[in-house]
Image 1 (cartoon, one colour):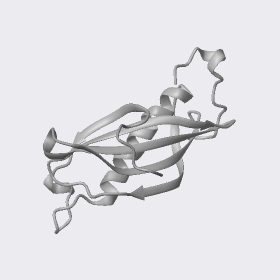
Image 2 (tube, rainbow, N blue to C red; image 1 turned 60 degrees about the horizontal axis):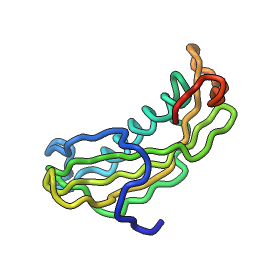
Image 3 (spheres, rainbow, N blue to C red; image 1 turned 135 degrees about the vertical axis):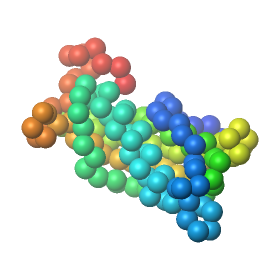
Length: 135
C-alpha cells in the first residue's frame, strides 16, 4: 500500500508506548503493536457483530516504521468485508512522535474476526437493516 498522509477509518484505540514494551535497542516490540491492533480490530468487529468476536486470522501485516518509547500509538479501523459469520477489518497504526509531534503510519494489516455465541460457536453477523447497527 502507498503511504498516505491521513489515517483511514475511525480511531479505535490510543495508547502510549512505554519502556516496558521496548526491546534492548529501544524500539517497541512488533508483537506489542500487533496486540494493540488486535484489540482495536476486536472492538470494531464486536460493535459491528453486536456481541462477542474472536480473532481467527491476520490476512496481511506490514511494518513500515518502528515505534519508539514515548510515541502515542493510534489505531484506526474500518470494516472491509462482512461474511456470514466473519468480519474483515482493515487496520492502520499511526504514531504521534514524542507524544504530540509528526503523525506517521507505522503498521497496517487486515484482521479477520468471527462472531461467536455464548458457547464460543460461530454465529451469523446481523445485517445492518436487521439491527440498526452502525459501522
